[in-house]
Amino acid sequence: EVQLVESGGGLVQPGRSLKLSCAASGFTFSNYYMAWVRQAPKKGLEWVATISTSGSRTYYPDSVKGRFTISRDNAKSSLYLQMNSLKSEDTATYYCARLRSTRDFDYWGQGVMVTVSS
Amino acid sequence: DVVLTQTPPTLSATIGQSVSISCRSSQSLLDSDGDTYLNWLLQRPGQSPQLLIYSVSNLESGVPNRFSGSGSETDFTLKISGVEAEDLGVYYCMQATHAPWTFGGGTKLELK
Image (tube, rainbow over the protein chains, first blue to last red):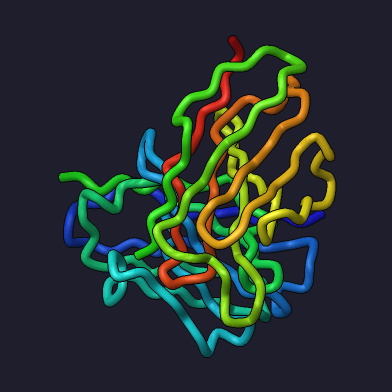
């Protein structure tokens, strides 16, 4: 059974950093692109980052480019999101998601909440 | 960025009723590789999103066949043929043809 379990969320002050983790199991992690998607409270979904199977290629929207870094450790079947210079508008539930054929989010984690507030 | 406009924002239905949700894109979603990367997801209350339909009309494994997707270029439709109680939640269309990938604003399906 495919499982994606996020961790590392919490309350952080504006301008500070936070690193999210996603532990994957039930599939060969190194064979799949992975991504982060977020959802602000009572709002819709926003794609945040994607990483290739080897980690050599990463993709971001302008809203987080230069502040967020996606990475992975295939030996540990783990995905990460380093978030720097956090802003109040980064407050959201962050989902780890698996990409099948690089374009479909076929499995999602349960999400982890990040609150950016002073 | 590609803007996906979903209508209606809220849909009230009775059990067994057939309903449709529209998703209109500000640009054609036909990719240079010939595929159209328009997906539909459902987020039930308190749950993570789940994939229902990928590449316009392909039913995800395990998803009931009362769900169907259609459309091309800029106009897409998700149809539920006979709503069941477990179908309630928010439906999102999502495009992965153009970077950045974007989502529609959502359509909330509720019981009448």
